[in-house]
Length: 483
Image (cartoon, rainbow, N blue to C red; front, side):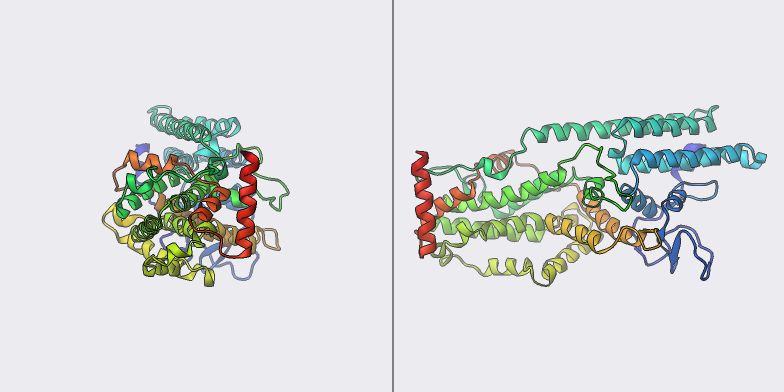
């Protein structure tokens, strides 16, 4: 049966030995010094024309591309060609191969079902991994056209038709779910400063703070991790490729220019900023120095627990919040803080040598995740803005095309490897139970603007030098004018 053929099709684990062995799934003949397309080095695909790479994507009667190549090519192809145009080219190759089989010997005709199964497998991997490629009518039209042609290979049993129907249904559900998430998120998208509250009077000492909601650093770290995993689960590989594909390619067009912009990257970045500002707000608005000291030490412990969990993004956000000027200048408060733990955290996040210490810790967490038996040990949440910068610089320092016009596929192997690691981490199911009360506070508590933070900071510990006195004078004048 076709279904059995599809399910038992051999698959190579994605990036199991990146560039360490042949990524092609086939043994390539030794071409000597001849100019070939595509080009291999030590059995690894390093470059090729767009046409040759597309042909390598499409299965034949005796060949099926491994998952590593499918993922990498589909991910990177959008830099050079629209998804619906790629689908059209794939469809043309499929039709040509189908016609050749139909006109061949009886033995070749008998292989039509096997060929159909391979095409369906490719379409399933495409629709499941990159559902957003099918959001527009042109892509859906091309998908239906290929599906219609392939269905003809098994009209008697109708097995192919059932599989395609289920695939289409799953795709529509994925697109619908993503659309709903985006609509919900749009209602709450606001810049951090819009949430700020300019203080005109001292906050009341009875005012609710994070310690009144959660005084256990481990529990708060777990709830932060829950939020991180929930938000990161809505980031898709094509979102990450916007860093590359939104720039003009050498084909002189923006390949994703006609696709509705997604806000997943921006929304996740805003979460980092909100958490940093929330930490600063919680510290600066505390009236008494003793309580402020306790608040600082509490967040140090929370950041430490985040590090132990593998939640580096929340850890960095907390450290960033405590390093903001309105908090850092509170010298009397910091003099009472036991800073040994904080010094260790800052050491891990030291930016020198391209964040070498952090990258070592991240690598350790990634290795732990690979051998872990529980979801608790599988958690890896990288510092997102550093992850994005890594992809950006990979894109900037390596050209999309080589001098001979071929696509520099070696570049896209590395970009896709990093993105695949991220996708693997984001699929971990959160082992911590959701605490609605704590999460509600983390996501909705008032966040001061930068101006409000400085006002609260100066009211807690007065200005110490001429620059601070001038700043405080300017802020007070601004407040009087608003009154």
